[in-house]
Image 1 (cartoon, rainbow, N blue to C red):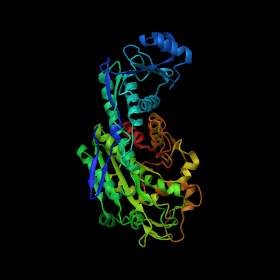
Image 2 (tube, rainbow, N blue to C red):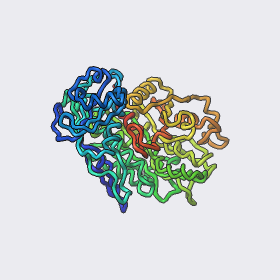
Image 3 (spheres, rainbow, N blue to C red):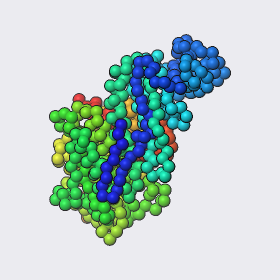
Length: 505
């Protein structure tokens, strides 16, 4: 894995997250001169004492005195010389038949958390005796994926770096080649997630519409086709909604297009909201804690770009285009005003009833552009769009809005597999009356049901293309280290959308 460095003007974005990620090898027999062994144990293995390690007197004594049962995520740390190791940690898996990709990721995250705080420099992880329904190789690859995801750190602004030297991990498997092949694809996904996390974690002064565009251009070395539309290009296309949101800032808006064309099929389109900072405009955000988090209001665009990178790195046989609407929503003598009427690229006029409902405005023009320029076979937008979504389902789910059942099923299944779950929320013509304006075709806010009225607003710009809207407000940031996420940006959506794209016929 390589550190991504891109210089634009005086801004240097050099990401150090990869420094913390362990070096992971898949082997069929122990080759690393490791001082610590992590043995994954199922209840059946424990009952049968099915390995020399479990039969060791010190290990048997520790199991008996602690009541270790090998239930999922149970840990037993044994400081004793066993089988040539100075230390053994038993990690319970629960019943192997119940191990999914997501639960395997979380077991890996548990290992990463343990390794991160432990002094051991080299660790062997023995999975060879486990045979889940998906097979040992897939389990090991997913375990390693979880280790990498949880090992992320963002320390570029600390005077003393927190990541330290990467540790060496060896995973013992029954089929080394298959495990390596599957892990290689998952490492591409990890890199997409890390890109999204890095971009979301950046403060607004460092990540602007222009510097985001530069990060997209950096993907050209992987075969990604990148196009950046500046203000004159957007003016020519009549993108009055996107331009209005960005005109209050001296850092101009951009429409960024990144396409991985790994097949000749009609593309899938992912449209991302990219508000690099959101003051709320003249409907100013007044909560201090909330406004600090508004550097994450471009998490949808970050997820879209991360998905393209994940697909490009594994040379996936799919055609996916990401369209990312980038702007700063600022206050100045040039900023849009409450009550202004904007003309979108689709021709619909929009009365601005709230300048803090800006995400749907930039998405309106981006959805129109994706549809017109690429005629996709399906289109998904992803955005940190509404607080109402958080009120409805919290951070436990992302909100899913669509009238296409097939698309709902596909996205829901993808989300379930990677543990980025979706909850379908209502979308229908009953919300249309709330968006009626006395002086324009639409208002940009309704009087109630904010998440659903926002989704209905977006639907007006999707044409006849099968479309779904993902509201990831609350999912883009984590308040603590949990499962595969570390505190801060999660990269939510990259794994879900990558899985969705790969599963398309």
